[in-house]
Length: 116
Length: 113
Image 1 (spheres, helix red, strand yellow):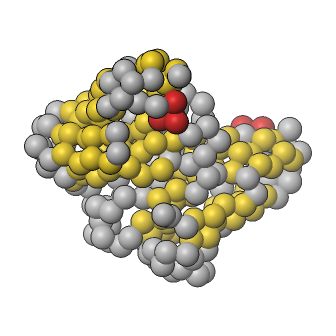
Image 2: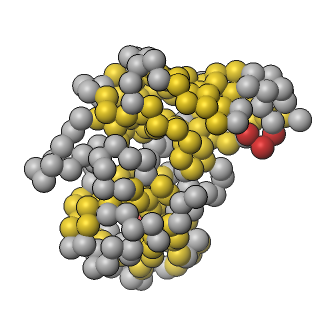
């Protein structure tokens, strides 16, 4: 069964304390992996797309990496404004009869709190 | 920056009412989606569309219906709201290329009394 698991469920850091969030997946065929950030009462905000093992993407204090079984979102020297829920979603090679690929499997997210 | 708008942001309404949740995007995206999100649960796809006059049901069974008469507009309708419909509804859109990310609106929080 295709599955995406994020860990930890919740993480509390002190400002400046670097850490990593994990997104592990067991899927039949990975087409892409997406990271999103979601603030309370808002929709998910797109951060990164990773397509193949070994790929890395960076944006400010965030760096996403991908292996054949998992992805990490590294947060370097976080600030309180980095507090949010971080979601991971995996796109499969799954096409409907019209040739469209819509299948995304979402993790439950990691709730990150950064204390000043 | 994504330009996708949902209205209303919050709606509290009584049982049996007909409700339409609006979603519009200004990016010219062909694909649009509706998700349900409940606290502590993953996003569940309830409807999607690949273009005008194209609509499909998603993975989660829903009593709602959708229409796609214009590229930029993808409204969701509940003919007769029930307390079980209470949830956060998120609209998203993406470019036609199959592995492009989805961009989300800020959602409608719906409460049915």
